[in-house]
Length: 127
Image (tube, rainbow, N blue to C red; front, side, top):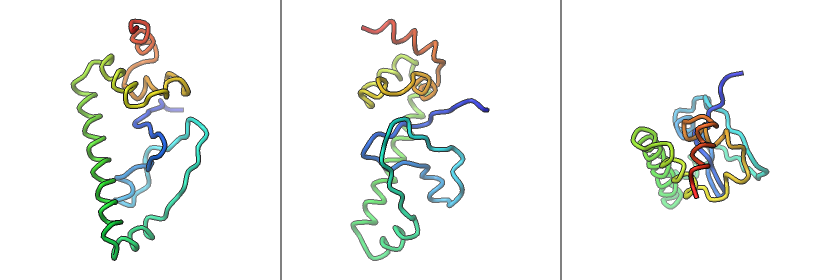
């Protein structure tokens, strides 16, 4: 079994999955895993595409979703490159309140790009 990698956390309501995979129509290379009980609705991309052809509002929504994914990905890349682990952890707590109380800490550590031991040390130093 390989090392687990947590790229993103989605909390309801959210559109989950790989946007690149959706656009390229290639298989998603990273599996999706629900860490809590949830309801997931599955939509067929071809149906959405066809409905968008004559629907300005739906096409605009799709553009807004794409922009949201793009901004989120760039933000995360910059955080990983420019911020210390403690700063990334504080941002995680602000953006995902309560999540650390319901999922295993190793998921959060993986998301932050640190070891569970490092995360534990960071948490011990915070008030």
